[in-house]
Structure formats: structure tokens, C-alpha cells
Amino acid sequence: MGFIHMNDVIITDRSPFELELSLEVYSLETCKKACYALMEFVSCKISTSSDKLLIEVHPTPDCTKGEEELKALLFDELLDYSLRETIAEKTDSIRTLILSNAFSKSKLVDS
Amino acid sequence: MGLSNKFKDLESYSEVLSDGYQLLPFAFHKISPDKYIATNIVGEYLTVSRDTLKLLVNGTLLPSHPIYNDAKSKHFIMDRDSDTALDLLALKYRTKQHPISEFTGLHIFVVSLRCDYTCKYCQVSRKMEDVDKFDMSEETARKAVALAFESPSKSIKIEFQGGEPLLNFPIIKFIVSESLTLNIKENRVLQFVITSNLTFLSEEVLAFCKLHNIYISTSLDGPESIHNKNRPRPNKDGYQKTIDGIRAVQSELGKDRIAALMTTTSESLSNLEGIVDEYVQNDLHAIFLRPLSPYGFAIKTKQVEKYNVDKWSNFFKQGLEYIIKLNRAGYFLREQYTSIILTKILTPTDPKYVDLQSPSGIGISAVVYNYDGDVYASDEARMLKEMGDEKFKLGNVHTDDYIELFSSDILLDTLEESIAESAPMCSDCGLITYCGSDPVYHYATQGDVVGKKPLSFYCKKNTSIIEHIFELLEDPGSRKVLESWVL
Image 1 (cartoon, rainbow over the protein chains, first blue to last red):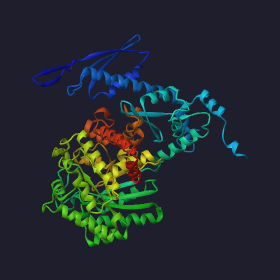
Image 2: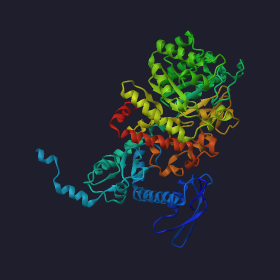
Image 3: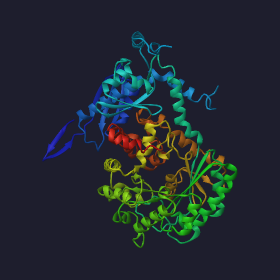
Image 4: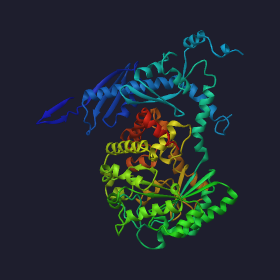
């Protein structure tokens, strides 16, 4: 995918492209969330095979971003969502503890 | 006890380092490639670089790091010294969530659908007929007031809307009287607001408002040319009547008894300073910069298509900059939407603004009793009905009781789906504690109450505004002004 210059008019080539990722680095959940966050620009088909994640990226009809820019956006989102996943894993039990403590005197929590 | 006993020796700090810290739940939002806002469940925030964020999450942030103590005091981490961190966090969270248990505080009474204006962005299908067909009856009003007092809320605010509510002033008087009678026994904090274009503001109305301490809310879209273009009256005198009304209220009831808000049309975009100046010239100290809502005539006249979220956000940011400049020059003027968000950022309380709550405030913070007795989950739900869609109609005061209305499937199902903490993208968003959900808006624009947030005007608008507020908070001069706007 790239830019085609025609008489000073820049037309974005909206061909689909693929990204192959390792499931050891990014979870399927992280991958789904990153693709969802970018739905304004791309539609994604996600598949897995053994230890690989394959994302088929289709730029939307209104997308004006090039392939490299879209890849950069996608990698940024992947990193952010994997960090979020780490936080969620590390704080899962303590989150439950805080919420049950917060509502311990209400009738919302079973004793 | 000697002074030396009040301080720990250096070794104890080394122990903290070797023990490390426990990460507490938080989310983050990217402002720019190397600037992130990390926020926790009670709305505390930290501004960090991407590298610092990684250190924090990976458990390798050293106590000597400049943000370590901040992260600790704001409950992003706890170490062996944080004895009370979890209790404090739970207490703050409970305070933040307390408004939900209060249930419905705002009760909107649409006392007439008639109106003397023909606003091109009107969100309701106004009726021009001079008949009682579109006015609320005493029987309907009595039942609606009784329902309002069935709410467990300690505070009951009754807001009169239209059409133009003063076209049915007798029913306003009736509702106030009924409410006051009921409140002798109920003893709630009872407030009244009339949302009016002020055309029919008579001496009788003013005297009644003074007697019952009634607050007035009106619309002022800017200078005469914009106001009259946006809000036409047959005699083209809407602006003058509004200004006369504002002055009469200020003079008779007091300057703090009236507030105005504006609606942004495409004409407003290039007249920002003139619009704000109009508020200053009329001694108004609050302004609400609002985009158009996608309902009623705003859709029919294609007004909502005339600007996109980027144009509106730029307008809002420029407006905020100008308003802050006026404040710094000595004129206090608060932008209302910013105030609501600032209160969420800088205090542990929540102002209960219907469109910025999770779960949504529909039905549980505000409810609408229409002129014909139909009950709607929000003002926007009523607007949707005027477009022929009764999706968010909860029932009718004549046929349904309180339990039937407030435990209706449509309300409970929508509330469940409106919990942002379980909505795609919102659940991971670092701005979630300052934002909320708007199921009626997303249903109206996307046909789905949850909505696809990457494509949502609501999400883009709030993200843009909240990011901008964080930028402004970093500037000491702006911060001082913004802190004075907290509710």
C-alpha cells in the first residue's frame, strides 16, 4: 500500500495488508481490542495458528492514512492494550478487595 | 518522645525498595506519543511519560523516582508503608459511587408542547396550535408529582420544560403547590427550575418565582444577529425579549437566580468571542457551550450535518481559552461542561450530570413526565419519541405505578448495557472516571445503545475536551481559574 500521485492529487492506495504477530507477545484479546480501537480507519480479520496471530487489515473507504502509518498506529495500540492487560492481571484480586471493602456496609454485597 | 523517633532511618527506605510495591488498579490514556494520563477508580491522576508508565506497570519504579511518592499518595501503588491505602481507596470509591444510591433527583415536567419560537435546531416537534391539546392537565400533573416523591432521593428538583412552559403557567403553579403540600410530610430538599425563552415572563410570573425561590434557565445563543437567526420568532424580536427577560429576572430575583446556555450552530463557529461577550455584557457568570443534539428539527433541517466533531472541538477549545482569558482579566465566567468534568477530576464527588455517568443517568438521575402523561427515561428519550420512536418510553402516569415505571425492562436493560466499565473500549479507557455513557444518543446515531466508541461523536467530543482540560491544568495561570470553577 502506498500513495499514488496523479496530477497533484494524492490518492491513498487502500489495498489490504497483513500483520503476523507472536501469541507469546500479544494475546488474542489484546489484538482484538487494538483492532477495535482503530475501526475508524481499518476493518480487521483476525486468525490464529499455533503460536501466531494473523491480522488481515482492510483500510475503510474513508481512510486517508497510508499503510506505514496504519501499522504504526496498530503497534502503538497493541503495546498499550498489552500494558493494560498486565495491569488488569496484576490488580485483579486487589480490585475485588477494594470493591467489596467499599460496599461492605451496604446491602449490595452478600455476607 | 524525641524528635529523632519521628523519622525512620535510611535503612527502612532501602527495605521498601527491596520489597517493591503492589500495583493498584488503574487505567491510562495516551495524550501524545510520550505523554500519558494514568487514572484510578476514584479519579486521581498522574501525568507520565511512556517510559515511566512502563516502569510503573513492570514494578521497577524506584522510590527515588520523581513520581514515586505521587503514585503512592494517589493510590496507584502501595508499599509496606501504605497501611491505610486500601481503606482510603475503598472510602473514596464509595463516595464517588454514592450518587447512584440516591436515585432520581431531577424530575422534568413538560407542561406544554406549544411554543412561540420556530428554532431551526429545536429538538422537539413543537406545536403551534393555540389549544389545550398539547398542555399538561391537572390530573396528569398530580400523578406525576406523586411519582416524583416516590423517588428515594433526599433532593427533588422539578424542572419545567416545553415547548415553552410559561404558556401553561397555571399548571406550573399547580405543580409547585402540590409539591410543597406533599413536602410538608416528605421534608425533601425541594427545588424548582423553569426553562423558558422568557417571552411570557410577566410580573405575576416573577412574583411567583420570587415567592418560591424558583430558578430560571434560558437560552442565549449570542449577539442579536445569531440569536435571532438560530431562534426565530414571528416578530423577529426574540433576542430583545430574551435580554429584557434576563434583566427582569436579575433585577427582581437576583443575579444568581438565572443562567443561560447556548447551542452551537454553523453560524456560531465564526462568532465565538461575540457569543461569549454577550454573556459578559449581560452580567451572566456561567455559559454552557453545547453542540447540537441529533434530534427533532436539528435532523430535519440538517443542522447537525453542518459541522463535524473536529470543528466543534476547536470551537470549544477556543471558547475555553477566551473564557479563561476573561477570568484572568477579572470577570468570573464559568463554562458549565468544563466545571462538571473538573469536579470529577479534582474532587471525590460526582455532580450527577445525566450524560456523564456510568451507568447512564437516564431514569436513575433524571426522568421526564410528558404533557400527555407518558414517562421517558431522559429528555433525549422524549425528543426521540417526537420523531416517532418510543424506544425509551417507560410507561404512562395514568396506567403505570412507580415500580412498573422504574423496573421496566427497557430501563433496566439499557442501564445494564450503559455501564461503561463493561463497554468495548470504555472498559480500558483512562478517562472513564470523568466520562460516562449516553445510550439514547448512541441508539439515535448508531442504532445501538452501547455504540461503537471509535466512531462516536460523544466519545470523540469527551476525549478531546478532557484531554484539553488536562493540558490547561498544567498551566498554573489556567489551573487557578479552572479550580475556581469546581462545583
